[in-house]
Amino acid sequence: MEQRRLGESGLTVSEIGLGCMSLKSNQPKQSKDIIQKAFDKGITFFDTADLYDKGQNETVVGESVQAFRKQIVLASKVGNLWRADGSGWDWKASKDYIIRTIEGSLSRLKTDYIDLYQLHGGTIDDPIDEIIEAFELLKKQGKIRAYGLSSIRPNVIKAFLSKSSISSVMMQYSILDRRPEEEIDALLANNGTSILARGALGKGLLVNKPVEPYLQYSSGEVAHILRNLDNMAKKSGEGRATEALSYVLSNPAVATAVVGVSTKLQLDELLSTTQRIKQLDKLDKKKLLDGVRSLYYTEHR
Image 1: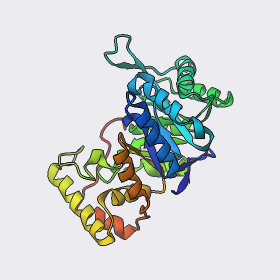
Image 2 (image 1 turned 120 degrees about the vertical axis):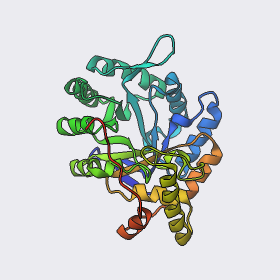
Image 3 (image 1 turned 135 degrees about the vertical axis):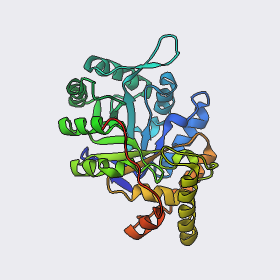
Image 4 (image 1 turned 45 degrees about the vertical axis):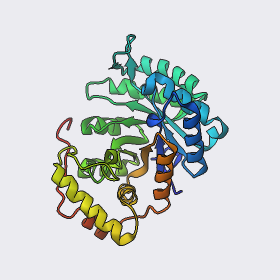
């Protein structure tokens, strides 16, 4: 599997990453088998967060990667605190909280460093300078190798780009969500910051899920996009998933498409597409987007 640079961090990641949120913490053996097979087949980027399953996801991931820990890029996220009664979580973004909270993640992940530590959200009203100080300190201490942001808010992304050395921004990006293409992808590429693309398969709509509205698109518009996708897949002899992932990975700002699976069958289906991912040229993209209107971020600009 192709490996790509993660921003200017010096790290490299597989073009397909495993989003571990979908793994079932109450089925640790199955989750471990999925992670092991993903690694065996060339996946080197594994993403989790302290929020997922109240930390249990980190525990499962940490236990599963021990045999090859130094051969992968392990990513986690911080910024959300579960309420004591378990009814939900609250946003926490401060230097002290980030520095204190990483200790729990390191313990659950059974590691003394996290390759990529990401702010799990964020608003323009956060103490951004303070947050950056926290990440820079953790980097200096050797507890993280790089840091990034998980956000689809243009104003927050721009603020971090102007003030920090973030290596990546995790954001939703697919043929069904091309909002990053308005300006954010170019800004990130010019800054040496990579996109970690989540939602590349449009919650299954770009594979086999029944047609329904998506973001600002009506069901009819989604169906039109799928027809374009099917026409290209028919000519190339590939499936929808391969074409959809190829579209995302043809964007030079994208380092990896982070895809979640919860079963071995889903992993096998994903791996079967990765062998045929290709770079789409301008003509291919034009055909895929024929008759498709552009989408734009309407908030947090």
